[in-house]
Amino acid sequence: AMPQRPSDTLGKRSIYYDYDRFEIKDEYRGIVEAHAKHLRENPNAKMVIQGHADERGSREYNIALGQRRSESVKNMLLLLGVKESQVESVSLGEEKPVCTEAAEDCWWKNRRGDIGYPGEY
Figure 1: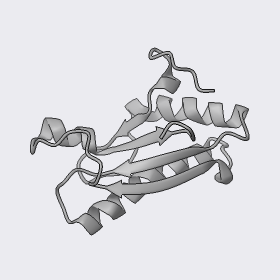
Figure 2: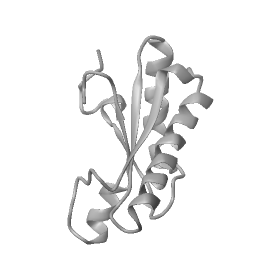
Figure 3: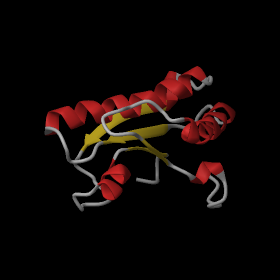
Figure 4: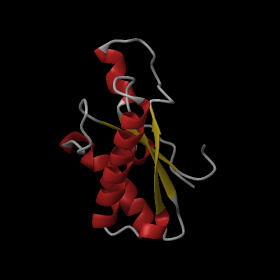
């Protein structure tokens, strides 16, 4: 079972990206590292990473960008010793915004990779 303490890094499940980018920024590396450790210590645990994009750009473009975002998290996990079989990366493009105003302080919340474990979504 996953720890649910909000102060715990494992409780953090979203990585946010700059506009049109899919590199993981330094401030989010600790989150990915904490989940990598959890997966290494629990070899039967599985994770799904959902990549998201804001509404700008075509639907097809945003599906591709969301995929690159989810794969950037997956690739970092693999570099940290997680097994390929433990991680699935998918893209939801612009289909699941957490915020719907057409403004930058809203868009950035939609440029994200969400980490989930089976039974949670």
